Image 1 (tube, rainbow, N blue to C red):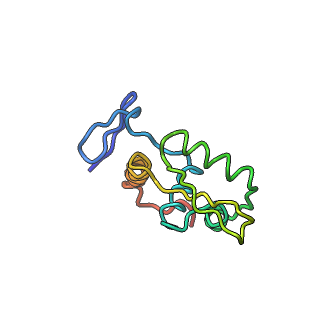
Image 2: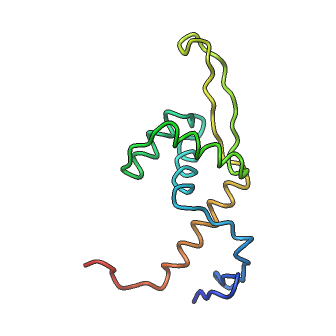
Length: 127
């Protein structure tokens, strides 16, 4: 099926969706959400940083990591939940991250949108 774009809307698999309602992610947001999704119950700062770095091939700073996580929480895409303080961490807590329903839906919409963009491309871009 052909996908067509209209002003402020996209035609995907026979249905017109308003772009505003589509809530597409930036590539960085997508990588962070995918990392959190894959890590499940083990998604906290250090593990997210390692996963995002592996996916992008980029070294991340903790400042950049926590800035992006704060933005994802602010947008309602991710929940931040404190863990229990531990002796090993000097009484400090780990903060765990999970996708909200909005985060899951937005990640799915981004995937479907990307898939629809490439659907009719049959020729290799780089040979």
